[in-house]
Image (tube, rainbow, N blue to C red; front, side, top):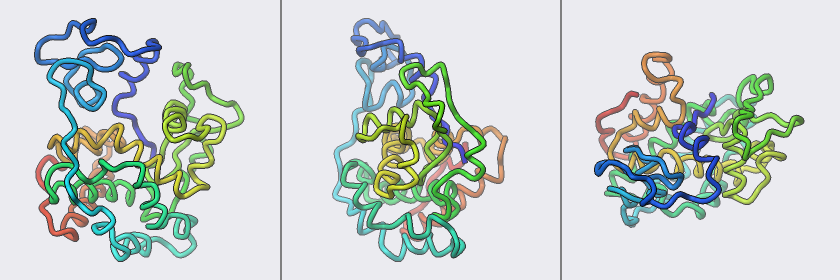
Length: 269
């Protein structure tokens, strides 16, 4: 259940820049966007919220969707109760912790129409359900045998006494993700990655951080659920893990049905 960062190559290339490159220095083709790191491209990593030039896709204004009203007690607990009783995550992951973390992300589930909001929330919880086994696991299964230290990410040097395997609802992994999430959320991700599996609010905040950084803008632009699979775990795409993709899609369709909205097209990556 390893989280794959969609724009890893872009991000790592951008590490050589201490300050964002001015948009006029990108010299992109007219149809391309300039990222905050000074690179040209057309995906959300270039044209999304950090776009510095070109045909940037500005975030849509928030709608009046009541996320807490959509993620009801019965919906949330309906996921939890499908896990085994001995699971460590059953008492760790709570709706209350999710709602506390949500306060830091007012754009989550509030772009486009109310139906769009419900689809995004369904997509988020579809991945969370798959990644954690219905909120069973706080840590990646057999994760302690994997280190996930990328030494080329020199901005986020690994602590040799720590491991950066998957933790939390989206199974945050790799030192650069822990470092960047910690920087954004105010915890020491490199020296205390374990907090993601010990503090439920921080845990949900990292999941929402990853979603808003790497998934939200693609989904809000209409790329479909398949694009979210590629962002969360691209290793499953292109026919590599059909069963895993099918499981994610099934959860998504099921939650859309529960919310009373069509799942839309572009379901697979």
